[in-house]
Length: 168
Image (tube, rainbow, N blue to C red; front, top):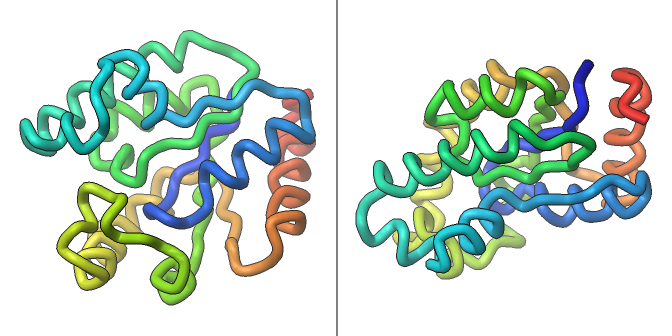
């Protein structure tokens, strides 16, 4: 049985915002994977990236191993979690993977790139990441939700998916 809802998608797609609201509406616990990593390592994501992206991805995989053991969660992942297939396997073995697909032009209107380690080079980097990752998000997703509506409408769609997979 699937006992987690795992949200994947680009930085700035709304994974954490939507995930928190879905958790609140359904009474499930919420975990932001990046916040979990910060708590576990006592370092910021930026500090972890200073040792290189590979270093961060190893720590991220260890966090996925820990989250995989837990049940009844809504999990918001970092945008690059899909770069290592083991992460998706760990999270997807007992979870429904939902790609929150926000059109890149809407992300660019919303996002503050300076707060994102991989986007500090600017919005061009966002487009590059989008091109690199988009097909992976689609490949690994059990379900896809387009985030181009109100947060309430998007949350309703998540809850519909949870009902479909009998997650209550």
